[in-house]
Amino acid sequence: MKKQRPLILVTNDDGITAPGIIALVSVMKTLGDVVVVAPDRPQSGMGHAITINSTLRLHKTKTHGIKEEYSCSGTPVDCVKFAVNKILKRKPDLCVSGINHGSNMSINVIYSGTMSAAVEGAIESIPSIGFSLNNYSHDADFMATKKIVATIAKNVLKNGLPKDVCLNVNIPNVKSSEIKGIKVCRQARANWVEELDERHDPSGRPYYWLTGKFVNFEKDKKDTDVWANENNYVSVVPTQFDMTAHKAIKDIGNRWEKAKSK
Image (cartoon, rainbow, N blue to C red; front, side, top):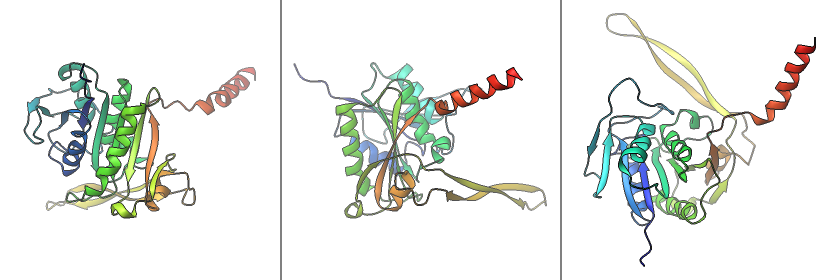
């Protein structure tokens, strides 16, 4: 009996025609049967948003030259929900999101539509990976990412992932020959120091533009994703949707008990 090829769901947050998802689909085609469900327009920074107060629309497309590909009017998480509940006849063997135009290291994982799609896949018990290239240009060259993407995807297809865990993969913006390897590491303690820049329109009315800079508070920590990328390693951070601060449960519980006894 002929072995069934893996079923791979592909999505992203930059939109179904973005160069990053075109590169990702081209790799996934070599590994299994691909179904694409992706936003019909850019949805960067949407985090884990879902559409609940307006209609959702789904349209067949021909962007990737495969039998089942659809653009969705909703968010990246909506796309995964649509795929699982409406389109796919069986649970996919893998869900991949990206390749994002720009990094999703450190705190960016919270805001990322790319990673939220992967997290949603994990919620559905699908082995899931979010891929990002540290290049924000629409014309970014994704050729150097393809070998890395294939290597990591093959590993997950073969070995699976721990329950409720997905992978956050960030690829440095360098030539293939300059990539030193793959580091499984942790999320750095880094975040955006932000400002709301006040400007004025031609009528003199104020409007605001969110600006700021990314600050890494762990510059010398070699076990973080930011250090890995800055030193030409691909970072792989195991990520979970359980946001409980498990280490704090006992400490905070003890404080409550002490407060009650006073």
